[in-house]
Length: 186
Ligand SMILES: Nc1ncnc2c1ncn2[C@@H]1O[C@H](COP(=O)(O)OP(=O)(O)O)[C@@H](O)[C@H]1O
Ligand SMILES: [Mg+2]
Image 1 (spheres, protein in one colour):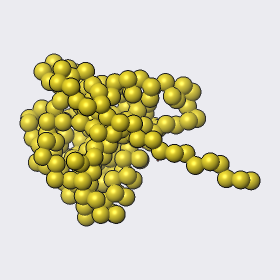
Image 2: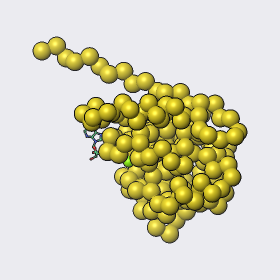
Image 3: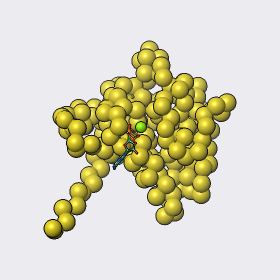
């Protein structure tokens, strides 16, 4: 079974895209066939991976037109494809909320995985786009900016929503725990 890691936190600027980028590239470099998915309208991950999402199929086609992730994925380096996002996702949370099965759309577009590991870069919200990522995920990773006040409150809410609100039950994603190394001795 392939592993799908959603990198999520409703807070912006805490390192989601940076984590998703470096994780995807590192996994590809050590030989895993990796699929990076950008589900954030700001499409920073797509840009960092060298994809300019103009005039090409994007995540919007996956969520609204029935395209599979393979239909849309762009190869960016050996072992690494990215499903690009674009600004056309800006109103997707609202549009999705009017559709049946709106939390399941990404999961349904990933039913024939031809990759080993998938990494999804989520937007800074707990809206429908993020929910699609969490429902599709087997694991989730929550980068935390520990200098921010109340930094742990949003991740707690995220853990509570990790199995989505869909009528079709999806197994809840497991939290990936990244051990923090102890401080170096002075
Ligand atoms: N571990 C880190 N240490 C210092 N700066 C970081 C770290 N991770 C990310 N950043 C910086 O923080 C900013 C926001 O990171 P980004 O990954 O875009 O956050 P998000 O996707 O959560 O909005 C960027 O300028 C990035 O270079
Ligand atoms: Mg980001």
